[in-house]
Length: 33
Image 1 (cartoon, rainbow, N blue to C red):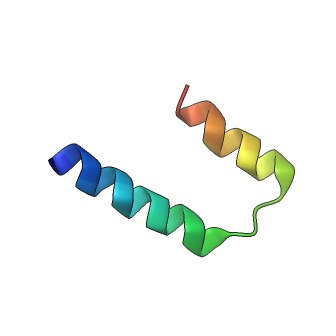
Image 2 (image 1 turned 90 degrees about the vertical axis):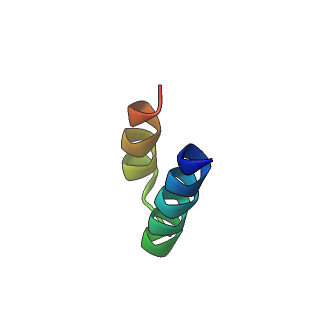
Image 3 (image 1 turned 180 degrees about the vertical axis):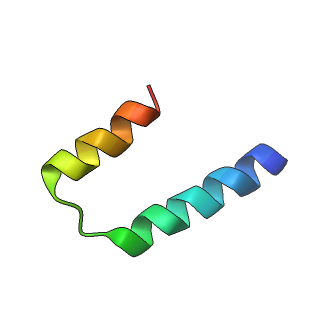
């Protein structure tokens, strides 16, 4: 389960930065592909 804990932490970090500009959001999403 450590993977899910890491994902939850990254999601929380991302949510803290919202709202993202569309180009910033695309850059973040590219890192997951």
